[in-house]
Length: 625
Image 1 (cartoon, helix red, strand yellow):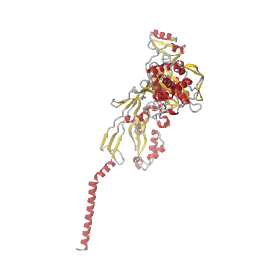
Image 2: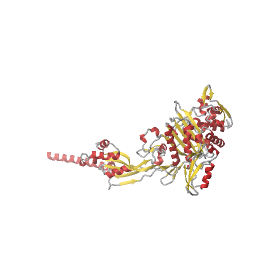
Image 3: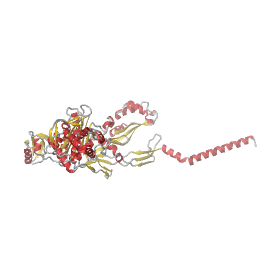
Image 4: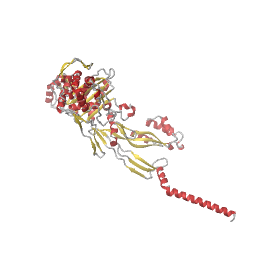
């Protein structure tokens, strides 16, 4: 065989080998590796994105919406378009200028983002309002697109903020009810699967599959929006007048344990939660720990009566102090001879130190624990503290004496109001309720939270007795500033000096009507700086304001008696729509002067308005038609 033929044969063999190698490789790629490369191609040209569901709403007990969803948009810049030479060298700067005013961002910051070289798209701003979305669309800026979505909005701003909480940019609850009930509120995410181009844009004529998201459930609170407004208004006034570190108010139904209002100052706007310190996010009602002072005497008194350690008529003597184990412990003033009932009316420390000694630490601690102190209440809010109790084996005569009148023990406001309610509601410690039920988007009840008795702490007889005694505290004792003409109000004042000089905590716990409580209120004013610092001076009037407004709102009509007239102040009765004769008769009974404007037989209007506090010497104007 010639040399040329051998060379040709070698070339053919090499070509055949190469062909076989290529054929095997192609076969391997197509047959063995084919599915993997196909999946990579699909992934490169397809998006598979989660669709955020519409969040459930938060409403008050009457269906008034407190947290809603609003249309929002995320603003994106497509850098390959904005920086295309065809758009002109100055186009990025023009985009930055046009967006700056709309988005409320600096031009330099926008320009820096839209001229990046490492990405093809940037997110300029999340959750802009519907108005901003519409402005951007009307501008028609090439290279700027808006992805529409839903965002959270709190229409009343600071109203109930430390209860409701707020959500983050991903629409998940971060605090308050929003966080605690996120698994109900969030809903079930959907999916979108669609073909995209090289820039990641969805192709209009491409394949798309959409799996719809399911809206979250609504959370119905026990809060009554109207009563909450009463509480917020009273708290705001007290905060302005007393300049304290904080004011906290809790209003509950003592028989069911449902929270009707919960307000604190300072607070925050949940639409702008990151503009304040995180310390303001949680409610002081559950996170604040303080010495309750004389309000705690209601617990000691109930324990003493229930255990038959004392009776109402037992006699005591207060000369202004008591020596306990070699230590002098003062009362706030000498009270002289007094009965047990008078000791509670006068808020006498000496009486309660002696009562505490008679009870002993075993019995007193048994009742303190039964009333729920030293343990969390389980309220459905974040940040709850347990309070601070001296271990029983560390309690000596001095500690026993101070705990008996509310010092040497620290509680949370939520513990105090529920312990107090057990004293006056028949003796039952109730579980705190702030959520009434969970309702699906179809209106079906998903879960319901019903009133729950944790345990019976004292007998009904003891509770009935305590209500009468606490009514006398308001009528004749330190709680006179909570007196409301026409209504039976009971309560107890408290004033505690803190660990630093000049640091006081003023408080008042009250309830009404005293013979059949519909509401119980706790007011705690921490470190007032307005001059006055006693609970009876500054906390009792706050409770009076809330109780008075709430009773009228609940339709509980006043009944006036001699005690009301003796006070010198009256709550103006509602005379509208009464006959002229009946209205004049009512005013005559109350010894209130009046004048009549107009002609007719029925009262069409009156001045002062119903519910206004008036002196018996004031002149009431009746407009008759």
